[in-house]
Image 1 (spheres, rainbow, N blue to C red):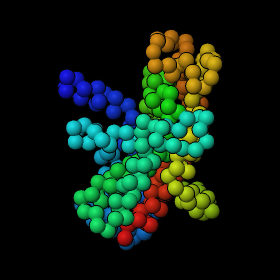
Image 2: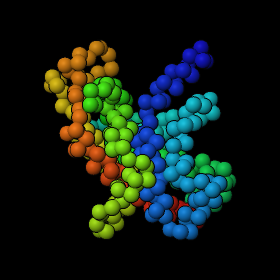
Image 3: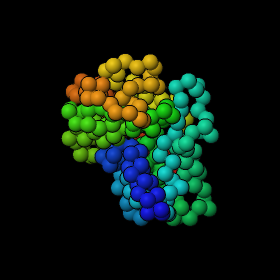
Amino acid sequence: MKLLSTFFFLVFSVKVLAWGPTGHRVVGLVAEKNLNRAVREKVTRILGGHSLSRVSNWPDEIKSEPGTFGHTYNWHYTDWKDQDQAHDESNSSGRLIGAINEQLAVIKDSKATAEKKAFALKFLVHLVGDLHQPLHVGNGLDRGGNTCKVQFHGQPTNLHALWDEGLIDFTKLSFTELADFVSKGHAPQLVAAWKAGEPVAWAKESKELRNEVYPLDVTPSKTAGERKYCQVSGTLSPEDTPKLAYEYSYKFVPVIERRLYQAGLRLASLLNQAVK
């Protein structure tokens, strides 16, 4: 029974990754470039000589040890239903915003051990990235798009996986190339505005973006929450599966690039204030 439960934990945990390895490394690298020099040196020391980009995927990698790190599984997402104006994480199965604030508090704590600060930093770089993936602020209906079956250039996938990795991999860019591209062309006033705010405000941005990323039903359903291709049970015919290709990529890759840049910029802002 223990082996079986571990198997299901691993299978399901794979489905809630955000941005994939490339995206998370982009967030870490953008943050590194925007850290104050003294803060960057302290962060490197805390991480034992490693960079934020290097450790950015560690929180996903440790899911292979549910006995040790199982308590962190629901840190990677939160629910914010369409009809709710305010966010209430007590009504969510995930606790992404709470986990971010907790890790930030550890980094600010002068009494926290080096080991605890390193753990907090590794999670903070990852979770701030998660927060900026629209489907990690879920509607509470479809597991952040995991149950939404689509095709991308003829290949079956789901909407969550497409946003985690599919669209980023489609660019054929390394994380260093992508970090360089996403960092260019922003007006200073806009960059200053993006640095402001707090995690719940950034989550609201993801919520507001979220419904835009769902393709229309091939056969329209009653409401957005009842999209035929997102139903948990039942078999979806190929005719009812949204078929996405270049038009979808051209529309949303720029959105992804903006969210990756915002995540890195905001992570740097948090650390510049928190690391003493």
